Length: 231
Image 1 (cartoon, helix red, strand yellow):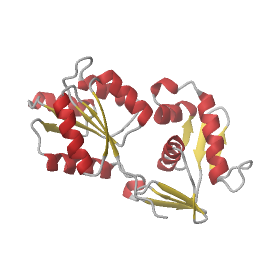
Image 2 (cartoon, one colour):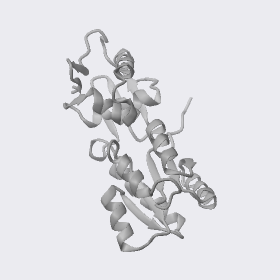
Image 3 (cartoon, helix red, strand yellow):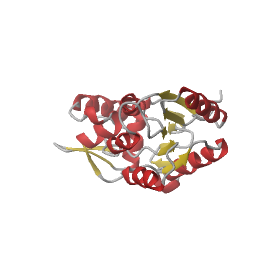
Image 4 (cartoon, one colour):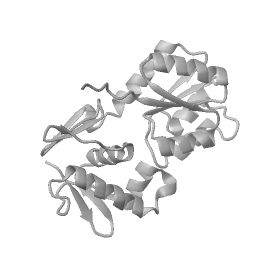
């Protein structure tokens, strides 16, 4: 049985329904999964819980500004953000880029250019300096296909387990605190929910460690967090 590579997911945050429809058609034709919403607060919640691969964000939202959405996002995630706005003045672009946007495109937009800019943004967030396949011991992770194998056999990970593994691989050898991990994987409102982390760390160890009771890959740093050690 063969499986198709996972499509990258893009969240569109724009209050104009016509623009959302146009973006959905453009992005789905370009090979992306698309979700959308019409205001900043809902967008922030979607990003925290859905963990999209990229965000297309309008600046003129009905509840909070796109710049405020960016500022809040950059407190806990580096998800790539492309601003798509009718505001084309240099000051608007500078403000958005200073707030943490990765790129800026003005409306009306060219669909091919939008797709090209998204491809560039996603290339910049490839783990391990652009390396798509990482191996350690009997484990192989293919980030481009979003697959994990152990001794050549596929390992089934949930979305959150995969996000957790990816975070550790991106910070190999570094101690990550409980709060850091919870914020990056579950969002800023989960920083005190250590029980989430204990459950998922146990799952990862059972699936990837040779001896889950004596872990060598996911090291516990007592009272602090975890360190990913792999050769």
